[in-house]
Length: 120
Image (cartoon, rainbow, N blue to C red; front, side, top):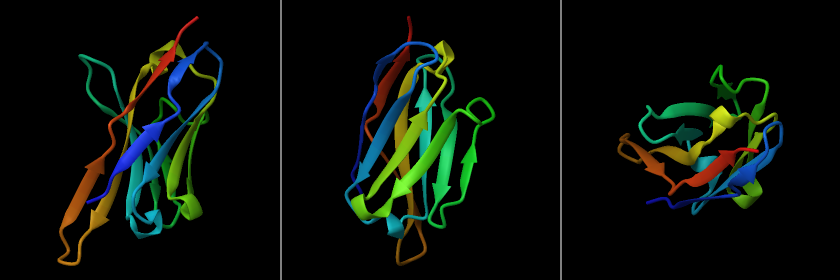
């Protein structure tokens, strides 16, 4: 079982920046991949960014060049730095952790989410 706790959401003006964090209850170096998703009520959930155990990253086209995912293994925390924010970035942001257990079964854990609102 892995607990994930997101923080850092809030209200920011268009063009501003925000960094959200995801603290894991286990060593993130043992996690296969961590991801940030976002969801707006009534819309499909969107995968925003991924970082693997080897620190490879991938981004949705909608955030490429504006968002950066990073990891701090010493603090078991993954970050999503969001710059040049737009109103359409408004959503609840969730982090996930993908782990393969000793029997080879994959598990995905979810945090509770943090609200990001971009508005003037």
